[in-house]
Image (tube, rainbow, N blue to C red; front, side, top):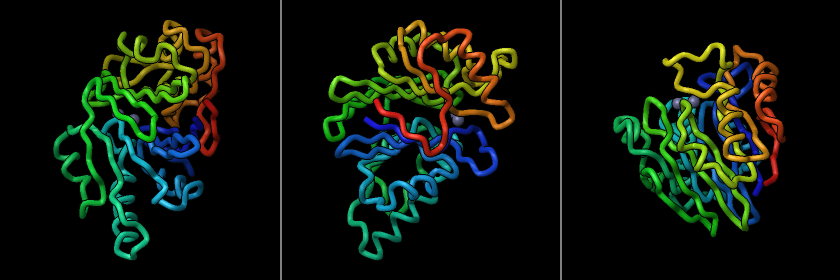
Length: 245
Ligand SMILES: [Zn+2]
Ligand SMILES: [Zn+2]
């Protein structure tokens, strides 16, 4: 599998950057994970033909994970009208908040499939499973498994023990680390770099990429905090960069 980071900021981007968006591919599959602001433009630079997208999966419906979906639906609709796309795109997402869920559909451009805790789907023999996270709105971490390899994306979350079991056995863990531990309060619905590292360490995962950076925090500080806990392969997500699993 190949992971391309399209956007790695949240809940707003730095200048020239994009919020959450990732493309996971293998030889015959392309799946867009999250579609935050700025992601469509970045996606089109590496996948100009939207017919090639097998599916879109949204971890949750916060704007930094789905706002470009509202623009992507115009692109799909217009391409359908011009005869350049025939099918709707399968979209997997939580059904809450209901108002946001209802707003997404537009002239039938998406085939919506609702994610629940422990949902399991199969796209071109890629097995995808979900685990509900601890976030103010319904949100899911997701695991992608194919040919004996496992990749897990945390979605957005506060610390919860269940994430450790869910990521166990993964070859690569893409985890949000939005904040430094010293700034973490009960009101922050995210993981600190320290917490992300502790989760990976406790699950015996040996390779982690941190993401969902707050533009006001230096990612070097995030990296240094994580390194104090996590002794294995650690990278900071970079937009446009590919990672092989
Ligand atoms: Zn977010
Ligand atoms: Zn969120």
